[in-house]
Amino acid sequence: MIILVDAMGGDNAPDEVIKGAVKAVNEVESEIMLIGNKDIINSRVKALFGKDKLEDISNKFSIYHTTETIDMEDKPTDAIKHKKDSSMVVGFKLLKEGKGDVFLSAGNSGALLTGATLLIGRIKGIDRPAIAPMLPAYNKQLMLMDAGANTNCKPLNLIQFAQMASIYLKNTYKIEKPAIGLLNIGTEETKGNELVRETYRLLKENSEEYGINFVGNVEGREAFSGKIDALISDGFTGNVFLKTVEGFGKFVKKVLSENLQNNIISKICAVPALPSIKKFAKTMDYKEYGGALFLGVKKPVIKAHGSSDEKLFRYTIRQAENFVKNKAVDKMIEEFEQINKNN
Image (cartoon, rainbow, N blue to C red; front, side, top):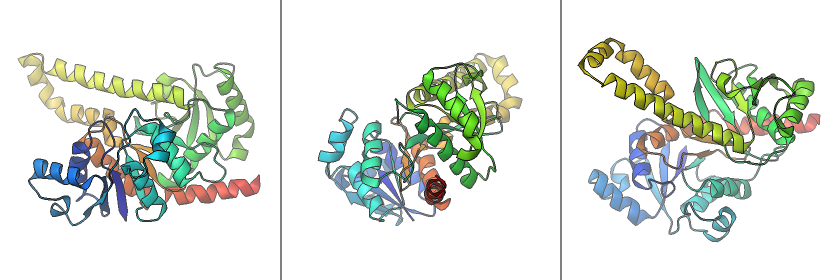
């Protein structure tokens, strides 16, 4: 198995990409191919690790040389069409040609989504692929879908998001009937905008036909109760929700850390609780959960956070290997083929 990594994408590329890959290389069975300017990558390897080239660190590493980079301010469609030798476009090309098994990037989100859709292609029966990160919840994980790919949606899109989430959770996490909730401002079916109300109606009336265990509307404060497995939303609302959760997690960790270091008494009293505090901090750290899966395209693609650091790249590379091992995309293709036949 080969994990394709965009070495030039993201706010902290290529240093944090390289460091994360070096940390992950002995934790995965796969080979890791960094895609980007070979001279730049090896010069940073020399500065960071004192090695002449990346392959000197591990024989599981390789570099695919490219000369262009898609920047954060580039227009997605123009970038994909005109920057043919960029690390992102080449990554998609290698994935499509079977020269890699999964592609991950922390680069321009719009370009990544456009490239995945245009160059890799949508699974038949899915109108719009979506970003699906995993978040912490009480005694389990919570899938959020969509977290930013589709800011304007129709009820059909949200229903397909729910179907994809159900298929993924059933096959990957072995949850027989994943509980699917609809993110809303209230639990009543009359609450929300037209999109949410119509989606609620369709899910309530046709959930068995869609193969969805729909449990109703879910308010943001109840999302992490452990009672649901996936939270469905349009990309605009989902992205706001995601960024709020990430920000609040950082806030809690910072305030807790400052209070524990406040004085000698608080430091002493904190010692017996350190194992629990560390466990709590680990649970709240979104980096532990890796990147966001891009579900709905024909090959495995993962979107890493634009500000990903060494730790997040490390966990996302590990996540990428599991994504392939679980055959999540193949199973989703099979299930949607069956859905299409039934319809």
